[in-house]
Image (tube, rainbow, N blue to C red; front, side, top):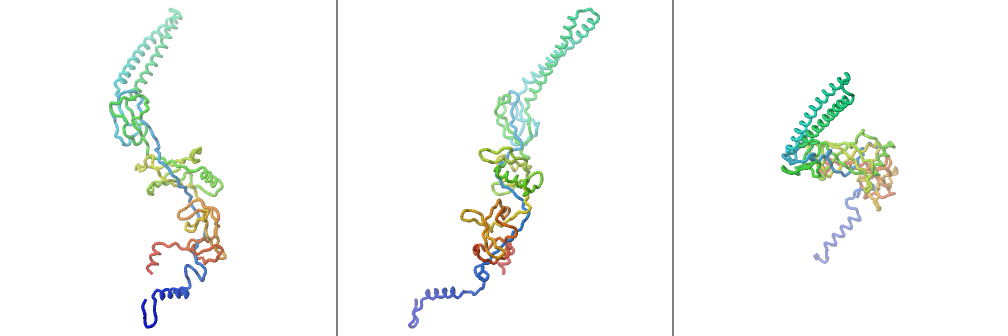
Length: 395
């Protein structure tokens, strides 16, 4: 505070008086203030028109191998060699392990000898049966002697068949000493090493092979959603894109898997504990990017709604009870509040099932100035792009 002549001037008081005068007189004197047009708030609106929309469902899922096979021995013996590289891709029929085959080779040799002996006995029995048949025809021997010779021939033939079967079994066991891959896929590490004793059909696997190209993704969808989707198709509200549904994947970090998959089937029963149905999709996996057990987010194209009503998300808010609402401007430029029923988001919009009609003007900008049952001045809302914003800033 300072004194000039006989008057005392207070700068703070002078500043307050100036502000009061500005407020009363209207600083700037503009005709439009706070988004208002002649006393009526100006709001940006979007006119709702039916449009074609592709409906999708986002579901959690886990990857699963296309095929899995545990490699187990079918004969007992000592592991002599491992014939594959751990973690590599093996082909069906490729040798994986060699079991010591000494005893099994000996069994094959013994079976071959037994078969040769049986064949020799068959030759003798056949010649005798032929001679006895001729002698019986000439009535030089009794019928009993001829019957015995014919029976001996049949027994010799049966012995040959038995020994042939024994030889086949011995050769099969010998082949089993070389363990081969039952399927094509990536093989795990070897759980047993050379020198280990293995037994036929043992519980412990020698290794595991998994086919990863293609690969499955198993997802869970609630039974109520699946039932609603089926009813929508039956009523004609939704149309299908074809015989199979397209599925896309996203990883935990938000990145997308570059290849699309196809929905193959859904379970015929509902899980009693979760109330959900398992859906399975198949994806190509040529680079091995997808590994079994990975958590992914799957997006399924469920169908097409030809006359969908889409309301921008910025035009939808929530009431005190959490229900979605939208503010519209009716034909008399009066603001009305509408309670909505929404099903899902499509891009930056909500798919609205009820509460909005074609032609409604939904407020998406200036909601803070709009009051239900009061007038508003609607203007068509234009989304501002980066280039438009830059041009506006330059001016």
